[in-house]
Length: 415
Image (cartoon, rainbow, N blue to C red; front, side, top):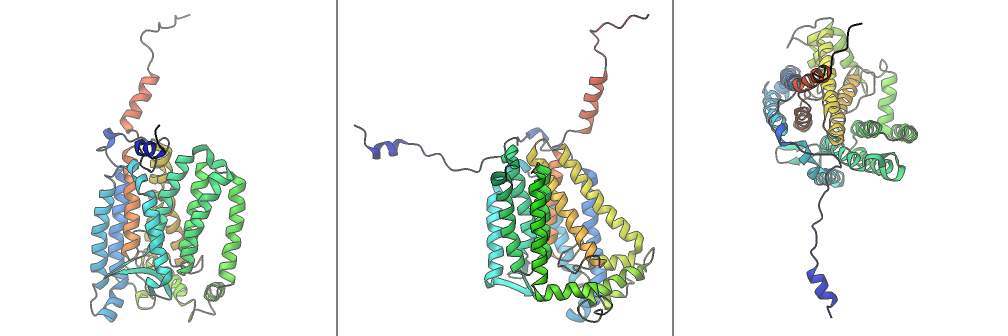
């Protein structure tokens, strides 16, 4: 008689693997198809603009602090070159294989965020948001935005119609996003927490979650934001200073006030590249408030072109989402487009003092490696999804074939 040990010895154990999304199917024929040239050109143009504007906004500060006017330029140029390699390298990586990195990336980002919280983070400006790896400072919150989008796309595509169920398709996504939002809040990064919440709501809405669940969660989000601002001393002071900017333009609202002055002094066409004077007064102008320097030096027209570039980036991203061959690609493209568009919108709103000050970068343009490389990786995924869409010529040809009359069918007789 066979013993239990013999049976266990003969049983072949299947390895535990991460299952692919339900309808995601890779097509090797599209590996060398053309990417979206408009999307690629806009992304490269924004990266180039970032290098130019960082130099223009930081030359004075770099001279005073480091005795080298090109201090920040050299670093941003190095980040930009690396970002271009990341952009076109990721665009060659089939997004259908990306699902294997979903949970490792989510776990690594969570571990890095926890490391910031428990005392391994680098503190700057009163916030602990960076991990110092030698001379390189990594901001986990920036990686968390892309990690959440990748995980949501995978989870929503895998659950398909179950996304309409509260306990299966809605609550788990909200809990995971809430965990990362909590980690951002402990790093004093309220802006990134808001972006994570908006990205989660956008993708749940796109996936078909029930509107009642979204409205209820939105009310909870508003209550959470109210509590986070009202019962946090520095946030509430910043909020009051934003409401009464004239009274606090020499203290708490100084940066926001000088940013508005930058936009106003630019006029329709700006004072000229490199001729702005607000770099003398606006603190850290090359980081979160680089849009204010664009407004001063390139004027209202320059800001319009900047907004148009981001709008075109989002439109081409949504186009890639609508043309994606499966739900997984659609959710990825929608999420990344929302990530870039929402962050650009919030940054410009803060720079114009429409919203209180938050620590959010302007995608591709603000100084910093973490934000630039994460945005480049996201844009690279968008380019790969655009590569997998149906070619324009094939679509046009199929339409012509459908419209052509069947030669075997007799022509109607003339009456």
